[in-house]
Length: 216
Image 1 (cartoon, helix red, strand yellow):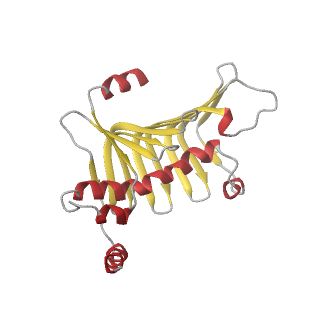
Image 2 (cartoon, rainbow, N blue to C red):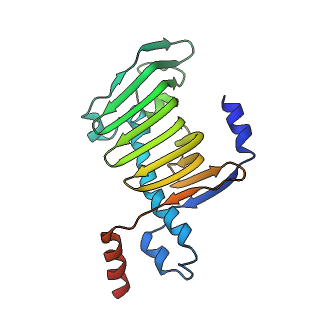
Image 3 (spheres, rainbow, N blue to C red):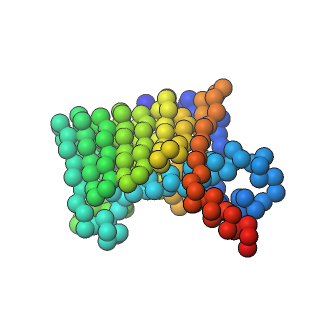
């Protein structure tokens, strides 16, 4: 399945954006013409809170997360010690504090076992959420056919016919969305002949901040 996905991505268009400061964008020349880039950048800001999804499984250093246990429900759980993975299958639901994840199946791949190894980011190799992936926390929502967290590279990949991220009325849509946590970069890919779509609705607070900044 992964091979097919990556073969398909070779035919896709790629866009890579570095998260900029909102007001710096407006201060630069040609801002009106860069309206689409502005909307994309603003939408990208909330995407990086998806880190919480990955670290809900793999990170135990954050004290706030440690205080809230992870609850996992599934029709079936299969552990394969020799193959170093655990699979939760059938109406899988994961919840930690305000974060909730639903998927048809979740597979957690571990690195080669070590004596007294702890369940931390270092012990996780990869996490796959497959089928009708739905993630919510606070005001945010994610929908995609699959989501893969690759721990050694610290990146999260959302893929499928349509991967969508929402914050209220703000949305960003693509075929494959890759989040690079260490460099704060995002790569949004669309199928050939299609385009990435990003919509950001400015709130009254956004407008006020912009006007106040212009007065300075």
